[in-house]
Every structure is written in C-alpha cells, then in structure tokens.
Image (cartoon, rainbow, N blue to C red):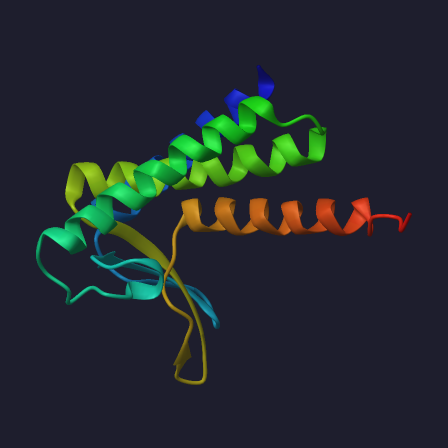
Length: 151
C-alpha cells in the first residue's frame, strides 16, 4: 500500500509545484545555474513534434502516455522486488503528473531551467525528476541483478 502512496505523493507534489510556479507566473533566478521559468511544452519529451497537427498527433500525444500509465500500473501490481516497486512508483507518479497536464490543459507545464554560460537544458518539472530518478533506480536494480549464469 505504501508504494501507491508514493505514486500519489509524486503526482501531488508535481501538481502542487506547477500550481505554485504558474500562479506566480514569472522567471525567478534561484542559483547561478538554476531558474524557475514557467513555460508550456506542447510537444513530447524536449518539445519534440510540437509543430505536428492532426489526428495522428493527438492519438500519439494523448494515447501513448495513457497506455504507458496503464502499463506502468500493471507492472507495479506485478512487481516483486522492493527496489523495482519503488522505481516503478516514481515513474508512474511522474507519468500521471504529466498526463494530468496533457488531459486538462492540452500541454505540459515545465519550470525548472538548468543553464550555464548561455547554454540551457530543456526546461522540465517535478514529474520529470520523478521519472528520471525512477528510471535510474530501475537501471541500477537491473545492473545489481547481474548477468545470467551460462549453463
């Protein structure tokens, strides 16, 4: 049951931070390399295909993330290891946060801007952090399992 609490916590934290940042509505420099900069992403990851239009784009934009959330929830229900369940919960919570934006707003709210000397990493949000940490944990769990023994 705790793992579903983590899913909810990731989703809630993502939605809360987006609400607070977009209520404020302007860029704020926090550190020399980190700013809060509210922007909307109408594409996929890193804004890919944001200029696409038509029913195929809509099917991909809404359908693929919805299918992924369903598959992640199914994987979480079936997962056995604690580390894998933790990782899947983070990924699912983040995916739900971004899917909520897509379904309610038609775009994803991003606001974390990492930059240095004029270079900017694509702006992201708390959901993306949960997804990235979860994927990293899944990778580490897989590496820890080791290679299968040859027979």
